[in-house]
Image (cartoon, rainbow, N blue to C red; front, side, top):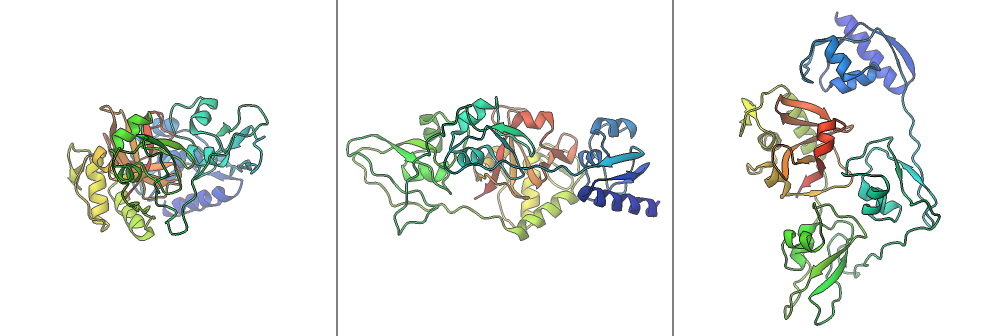
Length: 356
């Protein structure tokens, strides 16, 4: 059995890089495997795998033996992303590649996020590699490039600066730069994040480079010095430790309010994994962690994934991004790995964030 499992593992590795044919009747689950990965490898569906193996959930475990199709043909897809033209936007379609976000694509093609979502009939921000998106409205005219405020020589690029404002004006317009966050901008202008979102009719904390926001300058007040809000860069050591700890907890049951290996809820799972990896933090709800993190356009393994309107209105569920469009979380079935293409989570997806 061990020799057979080893040959199957070798075949899976070879077919991930080349087109070929592999023969197998059973497959032995390895650490990090998911039903969606195995189904993709053997050109079948998760539903068929679960049916053939009499599984009632997506939960699998290391060294578990699964029945798989006898002969499979595996072909590595080749996705050729369209190149945006720097001067004119004559491209009508763009193929999404790994790491792309709607905000990033809109910025590349000098169009607004709302137009991109409208042209593609998108109701949320979730996209996936290989997806084709319309990046123009069918004309050869390019959208005007957004005016991006240039920082003074002695300013940090990622730090929001206060634009010149009319002496008697209560409102002004601010152009988003790389590294800006709603919390950083709100501190600059002495307003709350909620006031800023209400003023600009924002449904979430998602902002993008070149976007213009209305801000409030309180009368008879002297603007405070710019507050630097440096973006936290991913820490490969901490993130890899978090991922290793999280995957060791697969199968731990769900317990409301739980934050130990005896049982977890979604936020308790985050609390345990990050603290165990050496990143000290308090115990909060999903919404609490949501308010202590900022959106990222290029999510990395170890970042957070948030979902809204699940069992209650607003932010109500979270997990840890694993890469390859998958995340690990404490679900009703316990700690499991789930694809972001899952119809339920795709519907409730809010975005990727990273702790400050």
